[in-house]
Length: 145
Image (tube, rainbow, N blue to C red):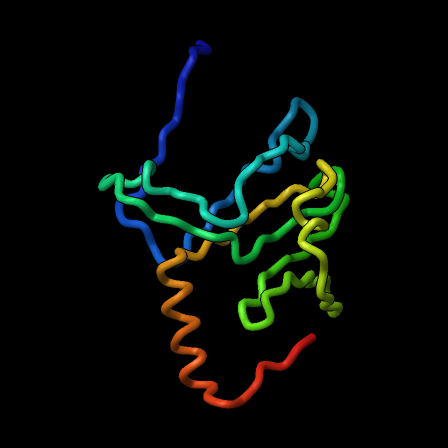
């Protein structure tokens, strides 16, 4: 029997990196279909604290994501976007091609190219990691794409 239900997920402790998999495919009566529902979220300053048991602030920034380009599970292609913290740029990883892109290309995607996997890095963790990278690099300069 069908009934109304709700599902709730709680995070025990906010991890340094949080991976969220969005349900992008479902079964229909005859096939598996792609779900193109838009999901909006901030790329910086996303506070997952209200979803933790402690309710303490846990602020994250999107660091990377995987996108399915196409209309169904049988037709399409996966690519990834990642934020380069050394150059403060977004990159698109598409098979053997890597290119620097304008952030608007990510935030204004077509419904058939919505994120499938999102990787959030906790701001506190990101600052700590960047500080250690800067220490290890010394005077060396990061390479650019």
